[in-house]
Length: 188
Image (cartoon, rainbow, N blue to C red):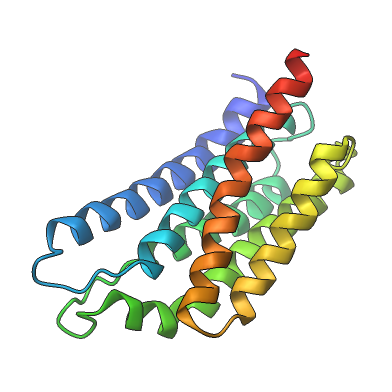
């Protein structure tokens, strides 16, 4: 077993559970859409969190040579993946009797959830810099980071449903756009 396989056995488990939580919440919301007001805000935030968690997987892979099977690395990884797990559990309400309108639920929880995403992304960039992995080596990486954090802070501070939807859609589209541009750049 390599160092990466050992360390990622813990981190991957939590990330997988986090993804499963968000996807289960989304599927439960869609199943109950006739009884509940699912709206757009919470599902969009769930999709954003799903994309962000998935992007962490690629970062973990890029750090595979630098990860050491020490308590310090496991603890740092646990803090980030544990935060992902925490926000994945919170993105969709479990108590639909108390929160029958998911847009109302969004307004009550968005700051916690978006702050969690900002923390995870910020910690991930810091880890890459500290481990000398150069997360800002290309123009696409730099532009993505600026757009990501600008969008996250914008969504965190935005008031009004339309502005929140705009920020969430912008952020969601940023991930596949950056991915396609990166693949075109690498392939071309």
